Length: 228
Image (spheres, rainbow, N blue to C red):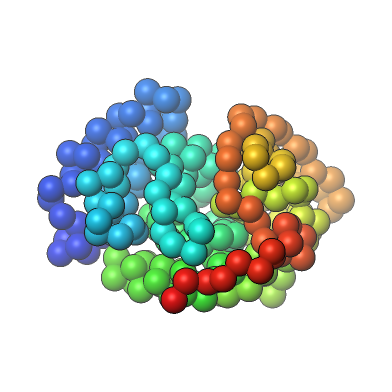
């Protein structure tokens, strides 16, 4: 599905094309992922004051101590997930909604969880304006969304101290879980494939740095105050 033309400013098309080329040079090889990133207007998922930097390969603040991940991270996680049209995908950490849009653009049926109600509402509005209608739920993403399981893919956009067992259990046989795991300072990306009823294969790749996954099976909430 293409973004609404009225929202897809022509002034940023060259920037998106340049970003796609940069990601290709950094090792992203899935052309479907690159095509989705080339279509989704990332500037609409950040404050207008940040639009001049929207297509740089950097993370940007979105409020509440959260960020929109750098495009390489989005592309890398999505490539690992191997999304196919019609896949049921659970996203943990809706955030700005940008990663959600990429998953929708790839034809997935997306279920997304966000801890902060204000971010969830903003993301829903942005996504609906672009013609995307994922299911978005406010809750503890470390516990997953058992009522909608099993999932063909689960993508976690925040750092966990260990792999949450509920997410493993909510994968379909053959399903993939992509999640950064480590301490607060640095995490390694894991791609876990469920190979049987009680069997999983864990593949570990590069180090990254994400905001923490807050929840019962993540990091404790240290009482941060939400912005109004």
